[in-house]
Image (cartoon, rainbow over all chains, first blue to last red; front, side, top):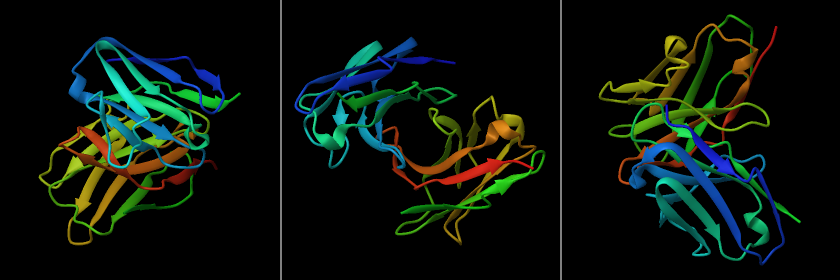
Length: 108
Length: 116
């Protein structure tokens, strides 16, 4: 099973600041299978980034994904109030599908 | 749109049965996934099913899981057998987009508590 480790666990930032979230895999992951979701409190996850770097429909361009192999990054260029949430990376390609433990982006 | 439904409370050792109703589209030709999230914790993949009969389950749950699709009713079903308190979670169904290799549409989830 490929384990995804997200860091940091919590990121305390102010609106307007830049957020950099890390997702590290225990084995190499094909970029086309690396996905990021956003989950706000009390809501279902929402697809943000697929294929490591492609934004899903309706996702603002302040969100960007990058990386390859075992290291992937989600960047939020300028945090808006609605961006404070938990972010999960997820990979597929082989069973089982796995998620990282999540990074909570909270208001400082 | 996806809407999960089922009993909110299940007794230990019994079977958890959930339905995901699909509106505004068909269940045909898509992979339908089930996920769960214990209170305050992260997401876990349960498995997927396709109307071709293709299924794939998380090895950690494989011995206790069954899924099916009723295309005539546009519904996807999940059964989890012999539940324990560790199965207490929010359960989500989600449509898999093959072109994106991601779950692009999620239901709002349904909370299931396992308790006597």
